[in-house]
Length: 297
Image 1 (cartoon, rainbow, N blue to C red):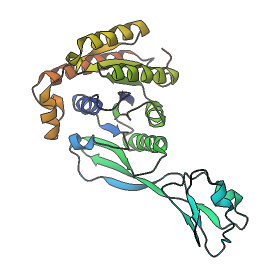
Image 2: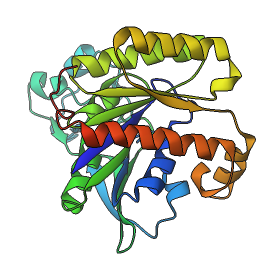
Image 3: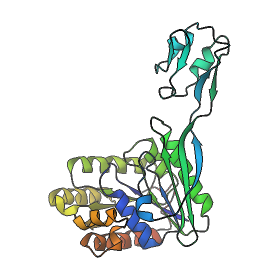
């Protein structure tokens, strides 16, 4: 299985609409949405009911009130302010980071660390369309990188025979993005022609390079700021990063997404441009046997 990851660095660039289009064009029988804080790829993929499973993140502290002597040591040591004593000991599960220090310092072993549900894992299986893996992190929970890794693991386990997997990555450049990049064959960066878009593109390219991931770049809404688009093209040339094309701003994309469709499902300029970007991306992926996990640029 070859794994194509779609990243953007910042939110709002059109990463998910490009990813949905890539899945359509490739007829990918394995795909995943790793934006577990706010997944939305399922709105376009038209899958049935998913198999659901609880995701347990870091454990949370629980108190045995029968043992607790209200000594206050755990409250004093907790740097997250998750513990308070007012006649009895209370632990705020939303503030608890699961570090286990309170359990370690409690002199009477009244505190223990217990598994806590931090999110929901969702796996869609369709005999014709294949496997789609995603998840929804519950409000106030962390460990996003661990959840992203689990989403990818479940996709690969359920679709071992699929020749290609298309993954909609997490926005930003932090832990979930690092987890998204791990183990992929190629990263397609969807850049935005703006100051913040260029800055985030540079940072995501730096992150991908440190993780030795092969990267290519396209620009969405390229005609919104042609001068910035030219800057991105020149930057890619300087860094020897393949530039696979440009997608114009197209109001038809919004209308298509509102109908649960990808841009390539309708006749529009953006859809045609995405087809060209897809062709260039797959050409590089197919002809580059060296492109893969651990590959150095």
